[in-house]
Amino acid sequence: MNKFKEELIKGSLKLGIFLTEDMLELFYSHYQIMVEENNKYNLTAITSKLEAAEKHFVDSLLLLKEIEKYSYIFMVDIGSGAGFPGLPLKICRPENINLVLVDAVNKKVNFLKKVIAALKLEKTTAIHARAEEMAVDYREKFDVAVTRAVGELRLIAEYCLPLIKIGGIFIAAKGPNVKEEINNAANSIKTLGGKIIKVREEKLPISNEGRTIVTIEKIKGTPAKYPRRPGIPKKDPL
Image (cartoon, rainbow, N blue to C red; front, side, top):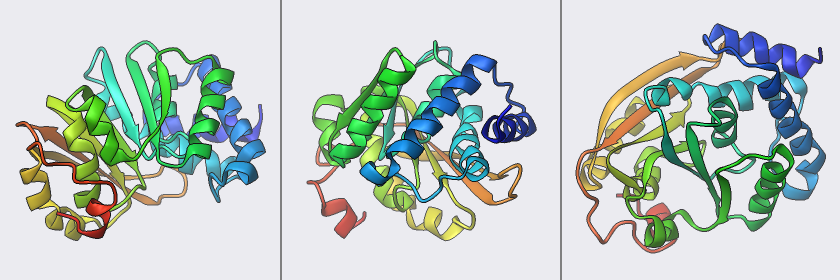
């Protein structure tokens, strides 16, 4: 067995996640395409088998705990880049997730479409759009929104909360030491109709790097003026 799969098995088992051989093959195919196409699409600085297995794939699987209660979800991954965390979650729960991957960089969307086709993933779509534009066609349509390494919490809250149904959740995968960021986002989250219901601190199982998973429930409708025009949330976060 190759080092990528070994690392993935080791890391996922420490999280209490069992991966089938079919899942491992899909993960490895995703990894291979990512490495082969990395220079063309400028996807990631993390390409070694051991590091990518943990810091892209196992890292994405940390979010499984937040969605395991759902039997079926319509999920959006905002700023998906090379497909994280959306694609690993989809591979682990192929029958449970209808997935939309969104990125503002068209060449990254082209990469995502290539992976979706190569892995023959059903109910999986990649869309080229600014996050702020998604609310035109997808306002309050999703059960779950996920993000990883996209921006500070008050910014990504404005991207994601307008897309989620009342009763749905937004899961933000963050690094360690985000208490101040969470405090700064309190007004933004409330204004957009959300409420933080869980902050879970984790360690990556091999490198021991810290991670924080912030879960926000949509408890009321987002005012129609949000999200603001493309570029405004980043320049002037709520």
